[in-house]
Length: 458
Ligand SMILES: Cc1cc2nc3c(=O)[nH]c(=O)nc-3n(C[C@H](O)[C@H](O)[C@H](O)COP(=O)(O)O)c2cc1C
Ligand code: SF4
Ligand code: SF4
Image 1 (tube, rainbow, N blue to C red):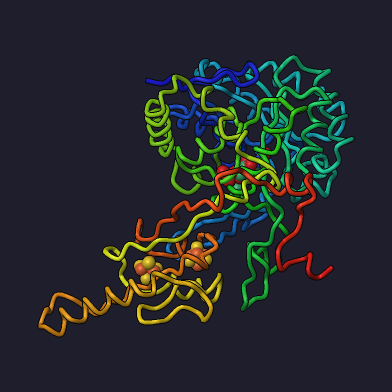
Image 2 (cartoon, rainbow, N blue to C red):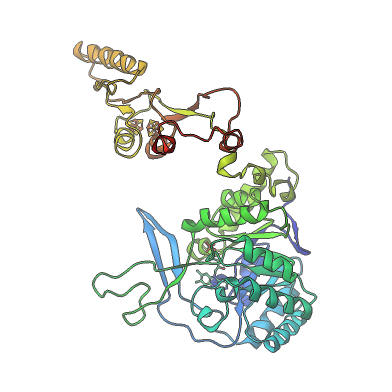
């Protein structure tokens, strides 16, 4: 069995699955239940000076029958007293010495930082996470994402914290920036031990069209909030990978954003995260989801012959390239399996209106000027089927399988993505030429033209 334990910047954890700082880590009672369920670590709900929360505070985007594809919140940091939180943190660490207990912090003045760091050390916690990511409420007071968006301020604050504590310092970054490397490098220059990302994305989740209140509504009004959940995973993955591949960066990364199962986690690990944190999926389904995450990741590592989580970390990073480095001679075309096709024609509609007009109806001829051997093949199958029906075969319906004009297919994947029958459309490799050709090579060699494109316009 693969070893799931990790050492994240000196913080040891029985597995890479941590709870992110949020409602699931509000109290000692919750964190202990989570550890019993199998979570390897927890980042405590952010501590700071007392605040008052609003009601309501959550809104979501549903997708068909899937609820909470995206979750939006206008909640602030902890609304429990510092003394109570710190007492519970110490108690949890005492009872669960093998688990990672990290305290999320958001303070204003240097004195406040100095004081809280000392008090955190006294709890025996394993590290602190600096919340420079919250995009609502606290940033208007000069904290949260207001710091994460100002690399110079971020660097200064990290260096204060580093001077005042011996604990590992994780800097939690905001995605509400255009270049994640800038705050990432500022954190490193300030002396951070590690970073975590992403915090939530600044957003308005919707509008109640009767009351005209943006959501979630607080007495008929709202404010922008922070977006998270499955919908944000692609943004988080990109930002994690951006830092992981930056040559000068090199700090351990804790990946956060839309993780809900072992596959999501494995993708973050492969793109360079050394631990992962989860919030929305636990708010939706409860702590128990970690059981499947542990089992799934463990089986996956075994299957791939990897003995530890560390062996997976960063394996996909070399494959994350710039567009100009991609092979232009690699080409795929869509193939339809006539046996499993149910004739819904979604692929035809999508290809005609949203792609390159090369999936045709069974009896349809190719577009004038196109060469299309499959047209004849489709006609032959349709005629054969019709003959059987005419001869009295009641088990058959007329042939409704569309056909792909492969000579025109650009291999965009759209039909494959919309087809409701798994495995019915496959994208099959048909290289344009055996050698690799990239845009960068073309530019270097002065071949940077697009036939019929920009060059003709010049
Ligand atoms: C209701 C709610 C409260 C949150 N509170 C905090 C917080 O106090 N501190 C913090 O660093 N992040 C907070 N977050 C952000 C999460 O820790 C996490 O970064 C984000 O939700 C993305 O992960 P997810 O997609 O798994 O939810 C909160 C998120 C939600 C939904
Ligand atoms: S891959 Fe794109 S272009 Fe090719 S058939 Fe499908 S939708 Fe059309
Ligand atoms: S979308 Fe899939 S099932 Fe529907 S017609 Fe196209 S290939 Fe057949």
